[in-house]
Length: 121
Image (cartoon, rainbow, N blue to C red; front, side, top):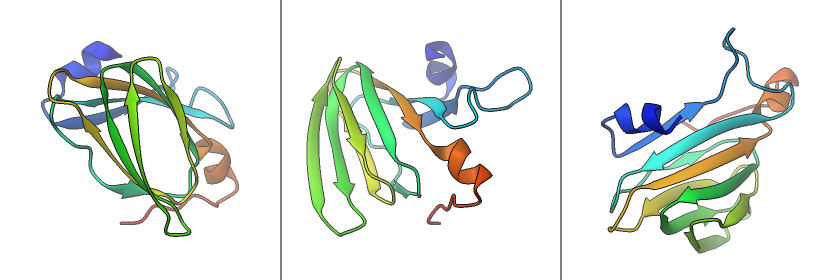
């Protein structure tokens, strides 16, 4: 997966783990990987998924605004794991010295099967 992420020229990229038919690896959980280039930020996004992030490499911060409007600035480094509640706006920023790689689990397949998945455009 790292080679796929590194082949993408954008400052931030995300690739889902899928089986050979293009399906999620589980009926209830989705896995994806993200790369944020050194000193760069991810796009701002918000959807109905709850997320568990594991920092595979790198360090940085995440700006999280929960559905209730609480603003959280979370600092993370390699081997940290953190959760982001559903319907939170999130932006990640990698520290300037190295790219950051995040492994992520979410409940997206379950929400899509229940027709409860939504993303803010």
